[in-house]
Amino acid sequence: MTGPGRAVETAVPAVRSPLVDAYIRTGMAKVEGWMTVQTAELVAMIGDIQAARGCRGAVAEIGVHHGRLFILMALLRRPKEGAAAVDVFDRQELNVDRSGHGDRACFEANLSRHGIDLQGVSILAESSLELAPAEITGRVGDVRLFSIDGGHTAETTLNDLRLADATLGVDGVVLLDDVFNPVFPAVSVGLARFLSGRGRLIPFAVGREKVFLCRPVAADAYRLALTGAARRYYVRDESYFDHTVAIIHDVPMHAEDQPPPFWGPGAQRFLARSGAYSWIRTTSAFAAARPRIRRLIGR
Ligand SMILES: C[S@@+](CC[C@H](N)C(=O)[O-])C[C@H]1O[C@@H](n2cnc3c(N)ncnc32)[C@H](O)[C@@H]1O
Image (cartoon, rainbow, N blue to C red; front, side, top):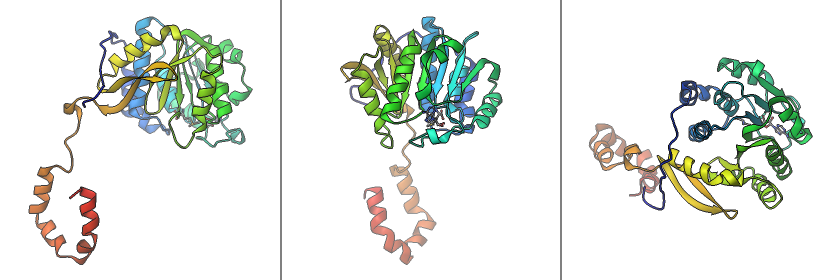
């Protein structure tokens, strides 16, 4: 791909557990949820970068649904690191914007199925709006990777960003979901309110599904390291809320990464010469559909 995309080489040693790659490749597809493989890769890259920086702490998520992202974060832990899961679960009347539908039994079964020891997971079955930061840090200590994907109103987004801010260690990263999802425009309002307040987090990267935030002192290091790690995607720097962020889009950067086009000249020649096409052309249905087909294939 041409354009302003660029890559910065930053050494990230290969310390990733093979369980993480296996989960991204095949496991996560079996857990109901919305996270794409590209987002999972970016989250795993953040885990790699944190390992390389010697950053330690717990992982936490508000809004776990059936655990698709939470399992990945739990697999990214190193020994003695905790995990906290917050969801309203069966109190769905508190899920005011109807985003997902947490199911504790399903969540726990999925954790076990993917080798996560439930003893090492603190489950807080309540609304994040009722949660004090100490309820998280008291159970798992400071957090290094915090995912916000619970309520999607402006009020809840602001509340959850403040919770993350209050529980995050100095070198931690926050993942905020759905900032650009047109179904939940209020998330961007909550983020804007947080960033114009006294919060101690700033954005350093923007992916298709998530905005990545951290402390100002760590932002350049995370942005450069993620840019280097994600170089097979389309990456460029952009100003966002007056901060430099890496835009990471799931378009392959290099022509050789792209699959051959389905509707290339070869495919057109093959179809034009086939017996089936000769027969279809004689039917009245084809004649009726012909203008639409021409529009569709751009001829
Ligand atoms: C979009 S889903 C989360 C998807 C999940 N992160 C995944 O990886 O699949 C949103 C979740 O947030 C929960 N939720 C909604 N409002 C909440 C609140 N105020 N506090 C905690 N959880 C909430 C819902 O029950 C639901 O499970």
